[in-house]
Image 1 (cartoon, helix red, strand yellow):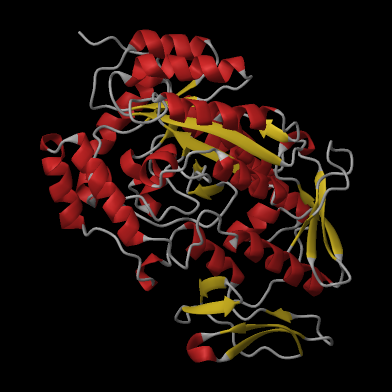
Image 2 (cartoon, helix red, strand yellow):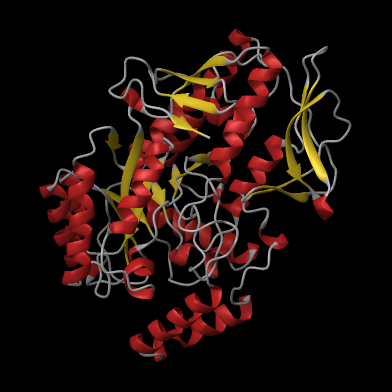
Length: 476
């Protein structure tokens, strides 16, 4: 008989917390006089003064691509702008699309709907309008039917061939895409102009004035991975870290290892029921598998989930019985389902907090692309810290991954360097998800950062004045 893990009350973990959060959010908005629910950009910037004039939106107009240098935005256009041209984009067919400000009324007319642009970024709503190379659904299904008969070396050769075929797309940029970073600053710029001021306070992204956050997550791909997970945990604990291990449902669970990791302060998450695309293959399959997935998540005591091979359907993520999901890449053209949410910060899919992974996976970096140093990981971490985002490293403890001495040494090199970055909050995924949920309703001591338009019209974000990093800045 299979041993069960620690029990978990889903009503306490989800229903009660959600009701409390909804009540708090409603009360806060009533106190501040806010009208209607905030959009994703408003929730991300979280201005101290939420009574900013509404910006013009695109309504139900057809979406189109806009360009500004190497920045690409997919959104409905805003038409009928009047006033002075503040900035210009290239719209459909090369026509100019301008950002206007009417000095008389103070109204600001962006060239496209900013809130919808954000939604289309994080939901990957732009995917159908790009020519990304990827395997078709029937090719993926055929692969998973035949996978167990194909030698590992042949599988890797096929993945390397696919990686060369997919190449690096123009959009989203890889390894780092700053699309939402730029959109957030444009939104701040337009909002401050519409308010008639050049500076405002906003709820800082991370606790205690940290510049960025770091989380480490691992997907355990095989039964042997449990033993190897303990070796990875030893390495992390030696350097002062804790991480999350996502357990799959296609092999026996070693409850002894699960218990040991939990008692040592590590987190256990779910990696799905089977290592294929079946959960998100169809709506019927999703609804059929959800009860069994809920049972596994409850037995693991898990609060987080990562879909096998990061397969996903955006809207369905919000129905998962977890507090957070970490299936969405920031930008990853090398997965079987390539794409990216283009953001360096967590966001909400319904009631679920999404924690996108923002560093290239260990398998991608070391196995598919053949990197021999941790330099790209460290450079990416530095760039994300400069943008005050979430540094999320996804790796695997199994053979062919971190179990290989060379890869383990590179992971140690990365952790050793990150341990010295005192301005980065090192946390468990469940802690970051809980923080983001509390930050969203304004019931945490986040401290107020400052957003301002400087003399060169750049938008500057500054951490709270009393933080460890006072005076540091990030510029558009």
